[in-house]
Image: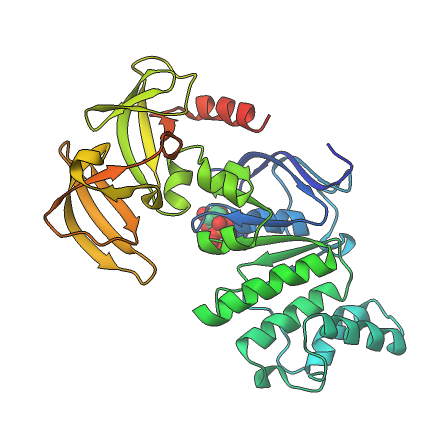
Length: 363
Ligand SMILES: Nc1ncnc2c1ncn2[C@@H]1O[C@H](COP(=O)(O)OP(=O)(O)OP(=O)(O)O)[C@@H](O)[C@H]1O
């Protein structure tokens, strides 16, 4: 554990009643001052991780460390952690100032101190001058900022954000993504942000934990995870992917679509069945004779920044291509790609095999 570690989960399992475990033997470390995102589909256990960190629930097995101390049974109000909830949980009958001041009043701080702290928090979220406003006179984005001010006014070491942008429309959501990221940098506090939106996770995070069925599938920087997805789930969940079946021929050589290709992967067995992932933007349209793969164009959609072209090769594999070039529907084209664009993954791996590989991957 490095000195910079603020939260550590050691083999944490969470089970409700007799149900299957919601979190299954989860271990990770969170460093001070970074922006983390927990990303995964609905029901995968993201909120449960936040609740365990906040102290709203206790682990069934394993240990949770905060600043090096086990906090499994430490109540929420004794942890230096604040949560911003999805619906903000603001008090509609109190004005902006009193909403932000709420926790400080419970702590029985003096009025003058409360005033200074609330004003500073409101300044941080660009809401100076809104002190007297009622909550129902604030827009969605402004309410969001009040909720954040209410969290930061307590000067926590960690702020937990549970899908805080999900109620906002797309434009405001994008604006708030920038704002939140910027705010985290200025404050230097650890943010742990929950979302099921992969674009949001890629745009905002220093580190992403991709979660599925109560297990962390992969953790890393947005580029690590986008460029080197560790398994099919991650490849499919993060960005769009072409995933086809193939087999390894030898180190640096793989076969799919009845052809052999140079790749950058090694260490798999000869003839081992594999899955190949190639991102749509890594495929380049060429003349058929210049392409590594020959495909027929099935359909094409204009997406503003690129065309989304759907093609099939002769083995029946579907290939999605993102290209600024247009293609003729029903025409034959070539697809070119670099060896680095081919990501080779083991096929039909058991959970134990995956765990071993994950351990090796995480060093
Ligand atoms: N108090 C509870 N009692 C029983 N089961 C629960 C309880 N809280 C959560 N669960 C179950 O635990 C699983 C994980 O829930 P969790 O809220 O952590 O998922 P999530 O990834 O945050 O999902 P979402 O994105 O939909 O909020 C779900 O199957 C949920 O039904």
